[in-house]
Image (cartoon, rainbow over the protein chains, first blue to last red):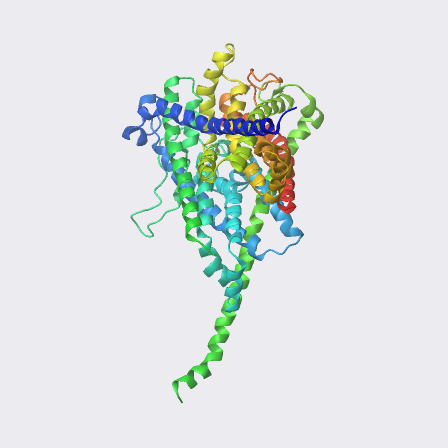
Length: 302
Length: 311
């Protein structure tokens, strides 16, 4: 029979072993991330120079650059944010503050949970049917922005709701006690106090949208674009122009996909370089989101 | 009249109009917010409508029986065959491989982070792991094709350049944070009292984690698995780049194969005229994909709700 000391020693050993195992598993994730970043940088970092960032695509790999996808990504993100941010915040506020606990609300909630899990390529098919053919927007920046806006809408909604949920009831009651209407309470108190949480959600959502490829392939975005869309800012009155919305475009992940799919290994170097730029953008945005979340958690004490 | 008398006389009218404006803006805002909330329903309706209307002509032409039982998928050939089975097989093989990686590793990470890791370490590791799901999938595709597959070829020499094994493994790594993050939340939601009870009976940490905390958090952990499945089924770029685009009715992960998503990408890349059977076939494939993920998404939502209500 085992003595009690032996049993205790065994139990302590079990815990130790699992601890080692747990650290190893966690490290597997971290190590993969490092391998991925390292591999990409070794392949692509040497290719990035001023010429690569400011040239149009080319059939000769050494002359090709990513100017068009860089500008395309920026413009598409403008539209995406313009769609997802106001709609997402408004929907989040409605569901958290206004909605009655009834069947309709339950349906909307299941619907949002499902939308968050719908594969991105399905959004692409929806956009192909609705935006490209039914509305006649073509393969334009507008279509791409609307598609990605729909895609990240659930992320913004969920972030808004979670931020609102952390605000204590007493804040709302205090506002009502002073005679504020519901909308005034939302506008002057709830939204300002939840800015940090909402901003985190928006940044995470946009960083996801920047990396999305599949829905844009589906709407028929071209990979070879050797021109820039019209400038949104003009020298003549009224100084802003929206003709860029209808322009053809390409974005960074599309360009990378195109280069990865070519048999010539020289183009895969270009793909790696594009990947480095892409990952630098998305990781920076995620780091920013972490910083915002962290500072918010420190600054607000109810 | 003193100044205050004037103010009192004028006040009712001013207060009245201000009050009316405030009431109006309150109503107006409520309506606008409600419309915004309904936009998410509109998106779902849009998805369902497009999938149904664009695939009706396809099913009228092909027939549901052929679609579900034919063993070949060559919609763009001169003699087209429309059997979804090879695409479903590709999707299942890559999904199973991904889950074989993500479920065990994700669960162990979740147990470690929730029960063993010191607070500060957890606060660092969690965001770092979540970066794994922030990496764009096209970059993962590159990684699978040009790093993981060459690595695997050293172990399995006759592995083709495009194979489902490498793509599945990388997909699994991408899904790890979905599993670990949600599972950890679920386990941390288990009340301290249950753990204290186990400790009082002489259990160590790992026994407590496996026999008390894990079962207590099972519906939350289950929902993380189910959402992981849904991700894997819908993942597109990794398989489109690294698994090949040749529909292949096989269960052998060392061969190349096409998933439903990879097929949609492949067809969309070409210039397919609106209204042709090839164009309609991507919507038919989309219906199958949407149906598969819908089942998992709803199941995951139910499970998550149940674990939120449990304590």
